[in-house]
Image (cartoon, rainbow over all chains, first blue to last red; front, side, top):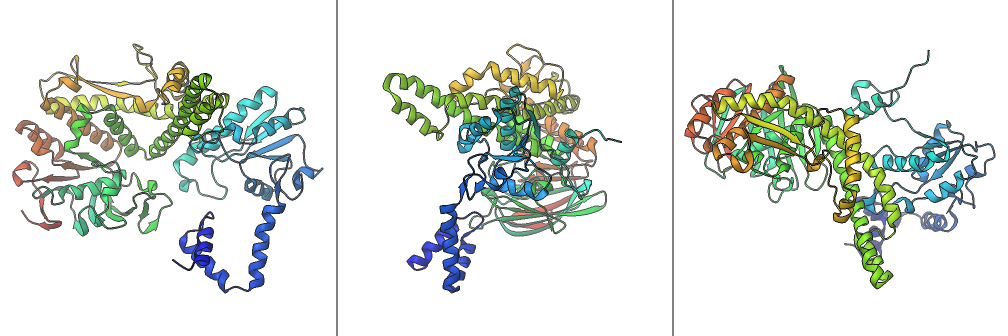
Length: 199
Length: 403
């Protein structure tokens, strides 16, 4: 145990995701040795992110204004919405440059063990967005795990009666990989989701 | 296949032990409590990544040590593979294959296949349905390691759905009490379940979703079990007849909760049919499920019914008959694995002491041709003469060659 303030810092850092006690200690001593100006800049950035960043009132993505950059972009396709669990998923999909529609960030997935039900996710907001009939396709891109699949099923059931096409991201083999190295579950999924070859 | 080398670090009573093994019969002899079973338990762990004696991993680690390491060199068709498992109670185990780390310990399943006979096997016949479900599921995983994933997925759905049902139960009870005493009670009942934010309508609409997933994953497990029972049936009959000639015929049938009371077997293991069936049954029992807060239908509540002639084995079979039945189940598993490909390693942990002379001899005759047989016994006389081979003396945590 270290003197009060230092230990405080280590404890606080240790609460961050992916930071164990050893790493927390390393970061703390790095900060102690660092230039005061650098540390001030970091502290400022931390406070600023809580102060200034808000969530887009349309899609729920992180934004610096009322609406996020993507929702404000008039060139984006208004007819397609891609549903994801977290803002970081938006970043991942944006990197592909494949998708030109807009997003909807749920803020998690349905998981009764963690006490997360549909009302805790931004599903009501999604329904409001779909109400005017402009959206023709909903692409569900929740994580390919049990909770993500359950959320996908739930949304599909809710949205299908509205006449919107509901699709799910394909899951299967990684591109550039070798078939023999795929695990059985992934390979099994790939078989399930096989498609007709166009020639 | 056979195990050529076993090395343990901080496993059970052993700080460290190295053991060379040969194909054929090897017997570990020594007084009780000296660590014979620990050796074969370790080999069983390499195959199934679970112990046949305890449900949790913590007792496998030597007292005072943080983790245990099991290394086994497995020879199959003249090829050697080194499997290393690091057992970390409370955390994920780690595995290496030929010194290369595997991303999940589960990927090391199936490299070694064993069939283990132990005094605990009597519970297959006399014990709870969970013993028989575990027997079937372990065999599924041994035949196709993919089923470890299927089983884990199903358990996860069950947990999620269970949490939801308990919320529904709390909401319902809270609502009932609340109508008399006001809103505070409703709040408290929901808080107790830990899901204050979930309303009753919310719960029921998500229950449909979990029903669908439970049915799909459940049907996969159920279908595989039904196919497995069909494959086992003739082998069990054959093995039982060999162990106890002239006795009543053995009967084996899978009793699934996907069937209503009195309803006959659907006669199919088609996954789509079973999925539909499970969903329909879940709807039928939903009221009772919400009342009790548990999932009442699905492979986690099924049983494998065992009978001798017209009578159920449980409660009616004699001690000797129960033993013969348990042995027949294990022998059938062995035959099935053998038919799939290479010979599994046979482990007979302290079983001969439990059997009468006739069963001893017949069991020894049946297993002596296996590629590798590992036997543990307290006294040398418990190892049948048919099973001559290498002997190890086990005393106070040390293992030495000798007769």
